[in-house]
Image (tube, rainbow, N blue to C red):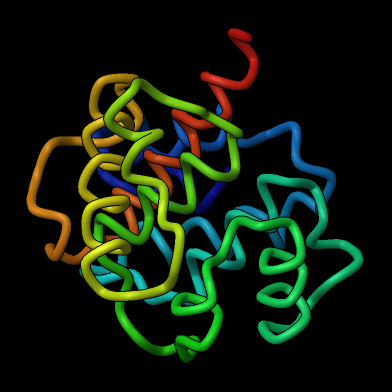
Amino acid sequence: MGLLKKLSPPRQALFAFFFLLLFPFPVPLHADTAFLRRLADQPVANFGDAVSIVTHFLNQETKRSDFESQRDFLRQQGILSKRLAVKKADQVIQKGELAEMAIKTLGIRGGITLRLARPWNENFLSRYFFQRYALKEAVFLKLMKDEDIRSVVSGAELISTVSKMSEYRSDE
């Protein structure tokens, strides 16, 4: 409780909001909040953070602690494409990549445009259109804000997206 008193009131509210949305995850309380506090303060989130929090969202992080095993798990689940599965943990994550991960994680089939844009192969053009329409679908479902698919994701945006994914899953 002492840590919350050191934060400004808006940050306390933001921290409490995200904590309450993410509370059902089966991790020790101190480990969960330390990761979220570190992530919320990052101006740019990296791919390792996204892989970790999506694995965390799927309640698999207790079995898989290192980046490589988490990435392999997401690849086996079909959440990461071949192109995303070779990214390094310290590379930045873009909005289109996060939208692709969110749509695949939630199993959203989308409208006709997203279904037609599903990549049949791993070429750039196919991936670009899928990420573009995945972001449009995520915006429509109020999971993310509408921006360019190449813009980078901040730590707070990553936490917000996963929180909204949790709300979406609980509503279904």
